[in-house]
Each structure stands twice: as structure tokens, then as C-alpha cells.
Image (cartoon, rainbow, N blue to C red; front, side, top):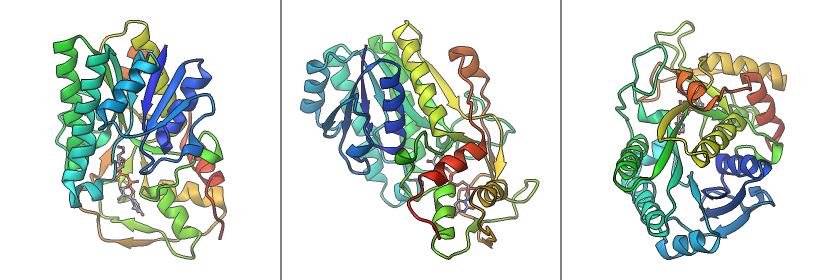
Length: 319
Ligand code: WQD
């Protein structure tokens, strides 16, 4: 089978490409390099520069490579940026998916794995968030992912496509140092940046209704994210039906838990400053992971320390 991976030169996309290539799948990558890096793309994959919005290019790539399925990861993904510039997110994430689906339908590509997000849930007030938890996203980013899921469901019903939407929780770590996350937008890289630039990490609020007062998230290793995509691709190739799955560990860790592991791994002083809460931060978002285990036989294998160790190994600087 041949899979087109859009956004395959990005942090998560490159891990997915690596997993597919190692599984013996034929892989073509489409990436506009807005945030991706060609050096991340596994040498076993063909690389095409361009945007999913370019219908002519996408149609050619699908046809010339006899693509049988698409893993769609290319998207803008910064929550704060989406609030400041919603049209950028609706254009790239929603209009981009419409263009891709048009091309797939025209070329007879009938299976798609979609990069969705825990951000679709918004402020879930449950201990474990299962896939039937109502999605009330708080940002244009989260909205764009939920709209994407709705579009895919309608296309599956109308055109006979088979789609799997994968809702990532908090992704961290790296399979190999050279694929580490270079975007400094999430907790682990932000703490690394503070520690390696002589600053103290900031904790966005310590007055949440949690055991230590800081927010709890479900951190999941990017290598597990990649393996979940491989499991979904294989299932679709084997005739699997459409589904929506959380990808997480099913276990929560607080901001202070993460800081403690970072201190152990780096040996650095993780003394922190508590600052104001970040607007829109839920106190707790932890995945229920039964459905993906039952549906795909997938269970995350890596723990928080493995995520921090592998991320630190790929961090470019030391204090
Ligand atoms: C984690 C926790 C912060 C930085 C992310 C992404 C989104 C989506 C879901 C995929 C929060 C706290 C952070 C810092 C802190 N994933 N924090 N100090 O907001 O849970 O959502 O995962 O689509 O991509 O937005 O992740 O890493 O920003 O924050 O205290 O310097 O760490 O308040 O509680 P978040 P995050």
C-alpha cells in the first residue's frame, strides 16, 4: 500500500513517516515546510514540497504515486495563534481538508487517518475523557479539528470513504534525538528553554482543584502516537471501519509532576515561579483509552520519564 502523509516533515509527521517506512509501507510526504524540515523526512519516503490547498499538485501526487490512503497531519496547531488569527486556522485546517478530500474523491482514494486533538473537548468535567464526551472546543484550533471530524464522518457516509480520527493528548518526547520537537510551545520544551537560558520555569496557576493545585494532562510519547497511526493505517488496509480514537496513556501528570521528572533527568534546579492562570486551561484532561485498545489493540508503551529523557537528548543546548 502507498500512504501519502501530509505534514510528514513536521515533529509528529516525521515520526509517523518513520513508523510507516519501517513497517514496509510505501510513503510519499507532502509538506509546505512552513514549520516542517526536509531533514526530518525518513530517507525511505519520497518528499514533495507543497500545500494540501494546491489541488492540482495533490491530484498529481495521488495519481503518480498510486496512493491508496492518506494520513493527514498538515495543519496549524498553536492554540494561542488560532485565537489571534482564526481565519489562518480555518483556511489551513478546514479549507485544506476540503481540498484534500476533493482530490481524494477525484482519484478514488478511499481511506484516511486524520490528526485530531484533545483540544476538541474544551473543558471536559470528567475524570477520564472518552470519545463520546461532548466536544466544546475553546479555540479556533480546537474548532477546526472538530469540524474536520464532522466533515470526515459526512464524507464516509456519503462517498463510502473509511476514516479514522485520532485525538492526540499531550505529545512529548522523540523516537531519536534528531526528531525532537523544535517548536517551543508546550510545557516540556518551554521548561527546557527556561532552564538552558538561566530563567526559572513558569507554572501557569497553582490554585486548580487538583492534588497539588496545578493542571493535570495526559502526556503521551510521540513514538506511541506514531505507532497508533500505523495501527490505524493497517486496520484501514485490512478493511477496518471508520472510528474516532483518543491517543493517550490514560494516566494524568500535573505540571509539578513533569517538573520533578525534568529535574531528575537533567539534574538541574527546577525551582519555578507561579504566575497567573492561562485563560482556557482546563484543570484536568486525561484520556480514556479503552476504545483504541479494543478497536486497534493499541496501548501506549512509554512513560513520562522516557518522554522527558528522549526530549532532553534532542534538546540542542545545555546551560
Ligand atoms: C500543558 C500544561 C499549562 C507551559 C496542548 C496543545 C494542543 C493539544 C493539546 C494537540 C497546561 C502548563 C505550560 C508553561 C505551564 N495537542 N504550562 N507552564 O495546553 O494542555 O494543550 O495539548 O493537538 O496542541 O495546546 O499543553 O503544553 O501548552 O500545557 O504551567 O511554561 O502545562 O498551563 O496546564 P495544553 P501545554
